[in-house]
Length: 204
Image (cartoon, one colour):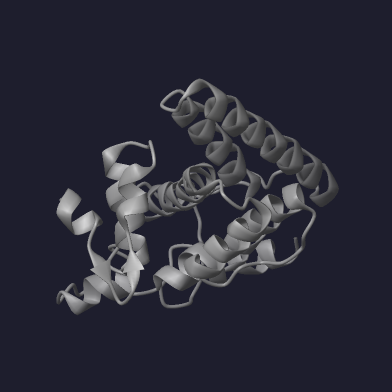
């Protein structure tokens, strides 16, 4: 699997994923995301899966780009991350995220790869909870707070100096999410229904 993770495909070298100190399953997940091979519903349909191809949060086709960047909840999450850096720019692809983070944190590849993995993994978990357990988030900021928890946990895998920097980043993101939650209003009532979810998030 590490050979696959390090493979140079279309000019992109993925050895940096292996070099980032995060759990192996997260490295594999991130590599699959860059390869557009993660098991979103559109990719499952390519494998002859006959289920509903719609996103668990809205009526759009569940593509990786839509799930992680295109639908309203993901946009709110990335806007919350952007607020930490003082920008309102919302990336539309994972490559744009990487370029975006590189601009703000030049030379700190391992740090922003940890953050990128934490955001995408948190979105994926929220998707899986909605898909398999029919439990939808009450607010997009739940994903941001979950991201902070992963970043803080994975900081323990880093060298001491880098660990402190990563923990500081998690704290800044937590503060950003808290402030934006206060601005946007209280969480939605608990719900196990998908209906009107996308319209509700668009109001944010």
